[in-house]
Length: 272
Image (cartoon, rainbow, N blue to C red; front, side, top):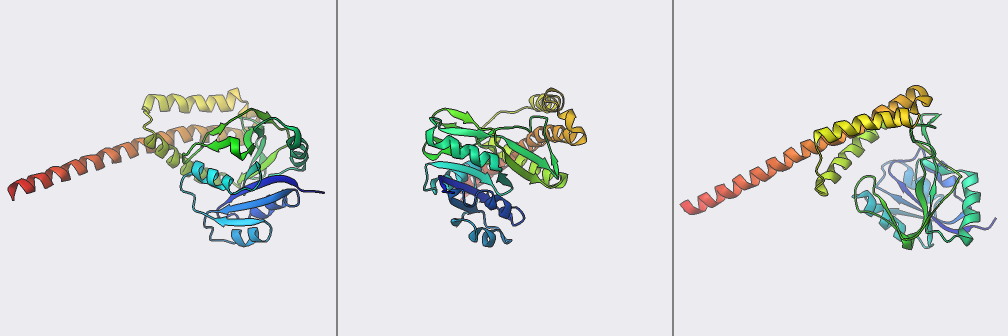
């Protein structure tokens, strides 16, 4: 079967346990596979070099900026963006092969089939949870922020039915570790963009997120896992705000310290 003119971009960081399946799901189908590795210290790069067309090493500083740079390395107009813990289903491959030649869209959203351990989370807004993963590089970019960057698209967006399988959380320990990293980045984004937050808003948002995910989006149908997903969403709001407050206090303290140092320096100069 002839390969299609599609560049698959895969971001990696210590993904030796996942990268093989990810690459196998697109090998022999897309005519360019590029792995962008964030200085892995396991066998990720060695595995990728045996399967990908190109492996580039670059540190991720800001997620949105990093992804935009990665996309600029592609030779094709159409890009499929994947993380190393994801793989493309045969149904999605067939659908993309059929859709690309005649489409007028600038991008397509793709359903993500998310797993925690071996459990497919079907409710609580986790499925189909379509995300824009297939796009024309000249009509698509991410905002330059460090967590959950928004997509900016010039043109219309279609919707595909085939899934990307995402096995990003082997267990709740990994889920919680990811939440801890992301809430730090979320708080930093609020600080950098001068977003004004308050405790009342954070409390309301935390409560709202739980009931919206567990009741409104039927997370209860996933049982205990559905409850934990809703609880972690609540925890995300609380931790983001707590870290934001801590960063504000540290920022104010640093500003105060700089002011005192300047005043002390000025006073010393006057005495000399």
